[in-house]
Image: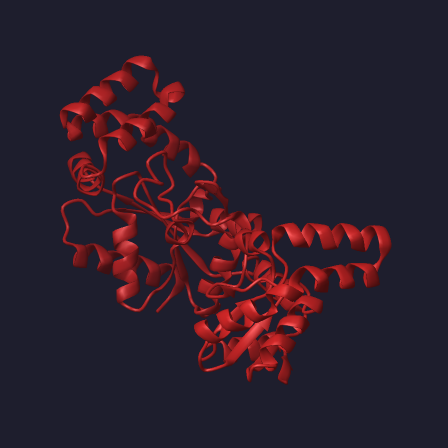
Length: 345
């Protein structure tokens, strides 16, 4: 068997060229994992419970023997799956703490010619790193604006010009409203969302400004870490303004083609805030394809919510830009000029 224990720093280097195997159970993997890892459990969910209970009741030796009894008959299946998935037979491997499960899987793979790099400290070490990474101080610049002002489009345009961007909605698979999950992939868990944030932040320079969109604390079911959210509230905020017609047109382009049933369900989730009459009017407009009407109706609610949320930002750190009726290029240039005035070139 050829096995090498590696540090987290070495892991970050090797993963650029080697696949990653997570030896934990399916449930642990679903809760959170190192992005890009492949799950090859030594103990499945049920077996993990059995072994864990035995460990607490009778100790390590009894638990170890039971673990081998349960998983032993599957050793050849695990080896065959690994060979099929990773024909180059060179992998990075981890479990929860870098202990018995990854040691056993490393031994199994070594028996069929794998070269294994096993992460010292396991997923726990990686998770400690990501937890700290998303709570570090950053030079944030927040892009705000009412619903429909095209903030995400402008942030992507800024990124195309070389600006640093952390797209929280993209990481959360949610656009941050009652309509935000429509057409999106399932959201990650809160813990996995932090892992994804940390991975995105690794590609940024902490000394340079980092653009983020103004968000509520929750994006769907995902929660922005408190320390990062607090920094957003204290950061410079550029609030963009657009005409009502532009905003309605932007939202219509984004949402009008979505399934009517899902749009109606999103409206119904807002019924307590909209009231019965406005809710029914919006539903009828969706059913009849009167998109500008239902969008205008809902903007009354979303504009009030935005004004309330805006109060958490320091007024002295807010800049307002009217970008109405400008090309995307002209809007982007104005945002860059505002950033340079705030942070310098």
